[in-house]
Length: 287
Image (cartoon, rainbow, N blue to C red):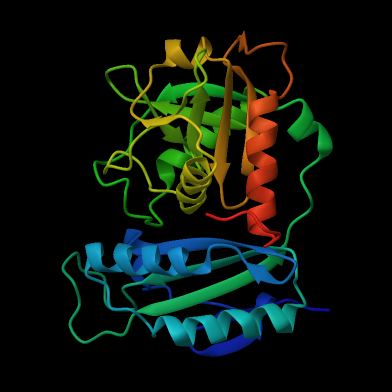
């Protein structure tokens, strides 16, 4: 079965889907995006993702292409046409098509593209053994809270991780504090059992999975702090993990050349992952 994409109001074959060469997303990275996980036909944290999309559009003064209600209908129709019950949906909104000029064009409709695809389940060893993360300088701009399609720094960081045989790269600011991964939020568990993750300022993207995990921590009376932590503190941590819409909660068992604990996923991280997966599939946990 050929895959179907959504392009500016039309459902088209993926191999025929296209946008104009003067689309401002292509020429200026003048656009935003969202990724929503699909579990058993259910869009995980759908409403917070759509709310964040609206916020990102507002911060860049891009007109929303449609209402959230219409977006929900289009997403479900795209899932139905592609017969995807477990995977992810990607949506991208740009300022639209106009002759190349840095200033905003007048009276130009924004452009919306959506695709959906299946995702393979994470290998059991990625959860049981954890993943390796490397640390790199954070070279991004000062509005990381906006989920823009300008991802050059993330691309370079992810490539460095791949070349080092790692899964993720944790970006580090000029003061030596971890900001976040190239496509995930970063977490540690201190020796005294406190969950720590960086607060959601303009230095990081406020991850939707991050938000849900914090809500689960509150609901389960887990001790946590939203504060910055250094690379040295991360390497001395009892446990560490990342969160994202596609990685869910994934243990980190090595940072650079430092192995955490016994090199296997810690019991706390596995418990937190189980809580989140139960929440994501609607099996009773709340966030």
